[in-house]
Length: 333
Image (cartoon, rainbow, N blue to C red; front, side):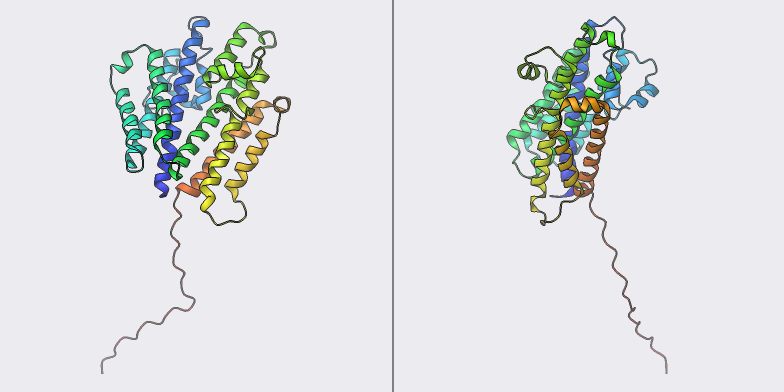
């Protein structure tokens, strides 16, 4: 497979996953805002922190109103990670490799892009806009899984999706646990419980958490479910296991030998998050552990990019040790 094709497949799925996550974040916050005082920024500004775009947001939207947050995350053209831009970037990558994608994948992604360019789409109520975007992204996953052969193309699709999903799960959990940590008297209160429920809904995990945990919602239980659950498809551990599997499949045609830096980092990160307990993580500092995990995920991306997406520069020909003497010029008689 060509490096540019693998790169485009990887980023198509990262961008679609990013758009789906952001649309769900905003959709849940819209619902949570109904339980907060009017004009409160409580459910909104943490979304900017989770997206990692706080400096850009403060520059573009100094008023920091709820409307500014929604517009910045969903439609703002000068935010490269807005939902509209993510879908546009995914479509542009898909356009360049249409011969690799299935017809159904391209048609759905292209239709999603053009629907976001229509004024009538944005005339709908905000909840319906976000629900349509989220459904379109999820439908793209289903079309991909149903129509694309399980060859290297599908593996790079899955790799991009899983890395983006793990990153967003850690970011939204870190924001709640670190930036929104309530005062001692607020712990266990109504607003605190609403925030934890909103966090689970943001990760699409509320129902599965309720089925697996037959007890009241507690910070330790929520964090443990989102980080360490081995069967929930949006948990960090599940994503790391699938990332490790995918990298092994992609590397299966390589010459056997000692594991390289990418394989070592993938294995060590998976082991670290498979053989730990949430009580230990919290006791040693959950924010610090998540911060290290995000650095590991960024490093995984960098190593994947270097290994598979960046073509090696051609080697310059070696100069001969003893230059060949040139043919002597003809000397006139």
